[in-house]
Length: 543
Figure (cartoon, rainbow, N blue to C red):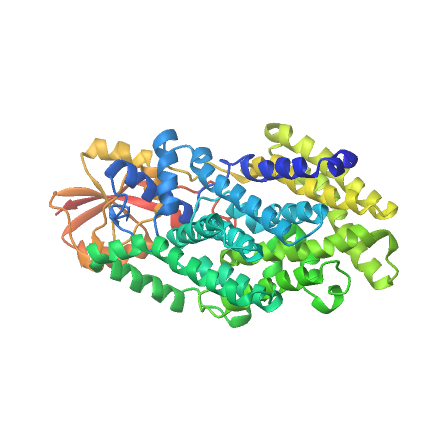
């Protein structure tokens, strides 16, 4: 098997990429960000809100619409109920990321083995494949920006001006801005430029001039929608802008050093990534010192710039993982070439610990999966048994590779371990599912018919519930302005946090609980139980 992989590296990369992105794509539950995107896409199709985008029937200008346009197209063809098809757009965009990354590695004049291996590291990095299966805005903006970076890099290295390189570079830069504003421009593009011009100083004036032209043309494309909406719906646009700016400054604020553990977001590659960041250790061990310095600086600049922003979330580290995968590949390439000849006891110990740990993890999974599914084994044996057998076999290959000093065997077995988790591990996530509390919005639709009422929410809505409901749920309050229905009775979705609103605004009504919406597939005592996606349903009647 390892021999076949070594002789078919590119095909192996394609197979692994397909596994990491397509297999079991529709299994995981949606989250708040993905739900927002899909709701807006659904309202584009059902209500025609393609330019003046909405969320739950209200103006939604916090995010540009390109990802939602793409999602709306797929939703119009395949419907808005099947999450597999609704996630295909982000999968395709992630494929574009991997392809662009592969081509950038070629432009850096790396060996064929390192080019493929760096791409394998990228697609098996935890947050990369996770974001590539979650249809929100993040992957779009960074994928499109990486395409722009690739063609700009080609133009930097071209002997004369190439109009195609220039056009594609500014167009995809514009697409990135149209996906999430200037986020990737700041977190991926700017660090790339700083790192590149620090290392590659030849023809620097020409390349800076081209960069300025690409930026100007790209911003014209990217900010076109923003300027249009700003002009024709200034009130709602300015309110959204103020809300977004306030979030960046005051929401989820963390200390400067919050991102210093960024390498852990690469999952499987956490320790190799950390070693690759030790520049003094690795700089004289790599064959292409300039390229290593460039991607190392690209990674560091990206982390530093993100650290300057007060609002911090783990998912914002996605752009860092792109150059980090390239950076990690230099350490992997060093081990591939020198693994059999390591003389330093320290180096031997580190490599044995790193990859021995992979083997131990594989063995632990092969045993632990039976403990995890013990109460539901009969229902999940089709996944549990092959998962256990394959992980045990891969653990043996990794340990054997350590003994025989076969780094290729260790590396590719680790990649296969990750893909095995996607194939057989993801379906086992349903082991903890319970229908004890689950109650979809179909239950309140029955109550709507029974009592001849329309459903409302208080002063806020839950995107996952609105997505499940299938259409907008009006709110009783917007921007602090309360507007009660004229009907003598109506349905109200509310929870304990809405008690103040109810006592203040609905004191002329009698309120009776008649149902519940609870989208949790977990028991209340489990850690992943989410109170946010549970609401009581009340019949509200004038006294």
